[in-house]
Length: 626
Image (cartoon, rainbow, N blue to C red; front, side, top):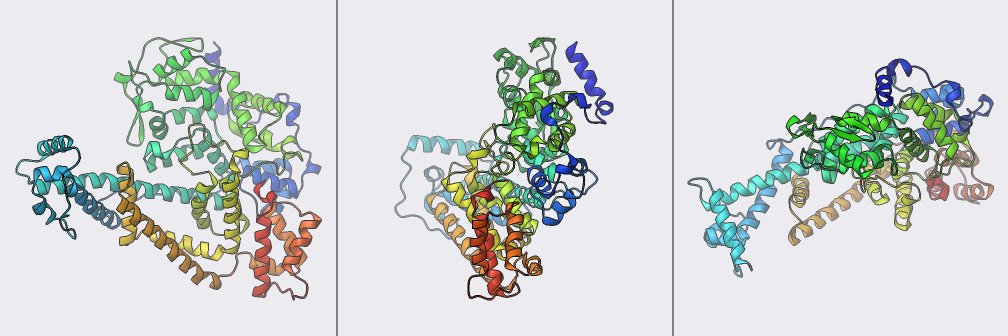
């Protein structure tokens, strides 16, 4: 009966969820912030935690509203424009970029095959090598160390040859067939890079910061990695699902993820069939996605796995294969019947422990690593009263006095995504620069679309160690001191997205070959190393050429402030979100306006000193927090 009542409530959700939960649902820990307590500092805190930071004008605009209006502005974002979608170019062997890449791959693979010992078994080496452009027979060539294996490979090749096909033609055909697969994977990796850059750039310029912050949250919660999925389009579809349900119904989101091709591939749902159930998704559904350990049994895992048998995908769409589905009687969490996947999910969501589990994770994400038990319990009660709708939960959290407590402010270590996007926004750099930040983020410990495991990123103190801290400092310093060059580099990358020269196709071909086999040859590794070295050299030359000609993004804003004191205070507020202590302020003023110098914000020397001030601010420990 409890499950039936829950299912009925889900159907009637649109009516029940029109308003927030009644006041009696809210616990004392969710007592709202009073209007006279609301100020610019709290508005800045809200924008940092519920988004990726606010510019001075945005903070003032939010501070002039009431707390309720400010929270509503962030939570009810649907009327504001969304980021334009990214459309991938399909893989087409006739595409100029792909054709160039494929040519390189085919030639390399053909050389390998003609060099192999098994090639010597099926055709004369001298004759074979005449047909490989640019390569003469090796005088020291000897048969492979495993002649038996070579002969077996030769016999297998002979069976696969088409009637009348010469050994030479066969090897070239095989080289092309294998290379097409590698080229396809390399093109897919290119699309993944575009997807990462698009998402980062979109966060930096979004009019819906909470939507993107929650999309990032769900990406870490329902963690799925490209190295297993191996399909950029599937990763994009999953990202779209997270964004579509970002602040909507958690129940609907769980059901959408259960049918998501990327998740089905990642946790082997597509291998879960009648008579041989795979338990991976069923286990993680409970342990990591909904209810947590201690609230289900091993028998529940087995029964849930049976309920999800036959759930797979075809292309980009979910597919239920009836013949592979176990429609027998199952008993799951005390409920017995011919249960399917949605029955299992509904039964899980009927448990109060789910709301507590999700509320705790939201608190750790938005508040801090050890949230108050009363706050978690209060949000869980709101979640149950709202039938898993998330907006009432987020409103209650962002309105609460607990969210703005002094011990909460500046006690959250920025994730690499928060650091990168927040810095780009604070410095008013183009969103395309945020797309470039993906390179740094990998070294900071967060590679988008490739979480470390099914648990996602640990976050918190795990973001900081001796190596990642250095990268974090260097990244922020580069944005400040080398912003113009980074803008130009991002523009070059964007312009090159539709063109590719021989060196580019060579690098992509190597990437594709690496995915298609265990590793690169020594020659390929050396060539890849040289290509990357040349790429870095060219970037440095281009950066030096453009940097002196493009002014610093904030120069107009700083010139208007006129005095070094006003400028240093402005930079601190913009980059740190807080005021400097007296000692820090004095040191930075000494850099901005050293004794004996003449301060003029329009002068290039003064502007360079102000850039140095900004770099020093980003090197403060406080900069790593929000």
